[in-house]
Structure formats: C-alpha cells, structure tokens
Length: 351
Image (cartoon, rainbow, N blue to C red):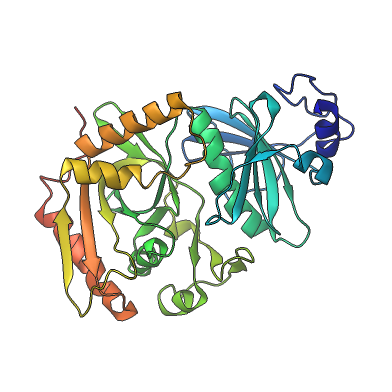
C-alpha cells in the first residue's frame, strides 16, 4: 500500500514503507515562503499570502503533485461519514489524514502536521482551491501541532481584533464586509487562530480574501474588482482584498460576538447585545471549533482546556439583529458603541 500510495502522489520520488513520511523528489524545486495563521509556510505553489515571512509557531511545507489519488487507494481510506459536510475526510496508515472536496481538490496531511501534499482538479480555479487548502486542510496541520483554530471571521478596530462566531450561513463574512466598507480591515475569514503571548491573547492574520454571496458583493463591498467561484456546492464567491483592506500582522484580541441563526426570528430594527456567562461562553466557543474530525483523547482534552482558557479571559457576547442588509450599518455602529461603553469589560489580559 505504501508504494502504491506514493506512486499516485509522485511517481519519481523515493518512499518510506512505514508511511511515517513521504520523501520528496530530488529534482530542483522552487519554494515560496509565506506567513499566516501563526505558521511559517514553504510552498512550491503560489498562495494568496504575503511573501517573505519567516516567523511562525511551526513550519509547514506544502507540495503540489501532478496526479490525483487513484480509486485503488481511495478504497483503503477510512472515511468519516458526515452527510452534512461537503468534504471527504479520512485516515491512512501511518497517521496521515486525507481531506477532499469534490470537483476542487484533495490533500494529504502528514502525521506530524508539518507537510501537506495536494492536488488541484483541472476544473477548479486556483482561488477556490487555495481557499480550501488554507482552511479545511490547514486546520489538520494546526491541530496536529497543538493549535486549536476557531470557525470565526475577525476584523481589526483601533489596533485590536474582534471576531464573529456562527455556523455557515449565519452572516459572519457579510458583517465583516460591512466593516470593510466602512474602512476597517479584515484579519481573517472563516479560520481564526488565537495564542497566548505574555499577558495578552494575540489574533493571527489569515488569507487576505473574503467569501461572499454575489448579491452581498454588489451591495456591501461595492469596490470589489474581482471575484471567483468558490466551489460547485455553494454560490459564494472568493473576493481577494487589496493591501489596505487586510491586516497582515498579529494584533491583540478584544472580544467575540456570537451571531444569531438566520431563523432566530429576530424582527424589526432592534439590536441586542448581551454578555454571556462563562458557562454559556464556553459552550459557544467549544461549538465553534473549526476542526471536529480529529477526536483522539489527547486532542479533546487540549481543546477543552484551550476553550476554558478563552472563556475565562475573553468577553463573549451574543448579538441579535434583524436579517436585513439595510440594518448592517446600524449593527456595525452598535458594536462600536458597545466596545467603547464596555472598554473595561473587554480585556486582552489573561490570568
């Protein structure tokens, strides 16, 4: 199996029969160096990230390969069954993880989370593939290196980050786009990494792009010049941001705002913001884990401890408002007023 799997990834490279690692080809390879999500990334494919960064909590190597995994190998992948997910996730011998998205691409993540090998299907554009690579696939590398990413979108206000929590379709990116339209900067869309640094908690930048429905782009982010289809399973488009619209450095983290379900029944123009108790905050944060596929006891214990630490040190607020586009400027103003009014409550210090 090890030889066959390796041959489907890179026919000319040597291999390790134990499948504990994939030995890369000896032919010359040009790597590009990036930094994002607290990771130093070396990649032989161009990524929509700032070039030249070398700092990071760990180094990740991304390699593109010339062919997909054949059906003979696919049959041996132990796939997880999640009818609500558009992704295929499974395990291989030796601790490697498989992540695939139909019609877009597939990745293998090494046991130590330091290597991702990937293949983009011919019908997929590079922007949609990179959104998947730097989201679902990257989350496996982060978790394997002790980092617990959250499913959140974050913007930067006055040098500090605040994040919107909510499931897919709850409006995280749409609300962030309203802040962008008002001149604030995006820190990350969909995947958020937070890390303790001394007495602060830092929020790390992601890819400078945002994912929006077509009607939202025209009405909220009116200055967007280009966009690309994300994948065949959604109508959302990937919108690259310019240099002034994205923050490229880690910043102190201020607060979470939990968004309501589109079916929550909030009507009219009323906007309500409520600070959650620690138990409520813990449950909301735990339910916002980006990666729920890795479930071994050591990871689950670490996830609980990390979530408890955030719930005890960062304010988490519930935000309720009517689901109308014309309400978004008022929602933005309410959040800004709440941050100012409760500046003593919003703290980036940890015990």
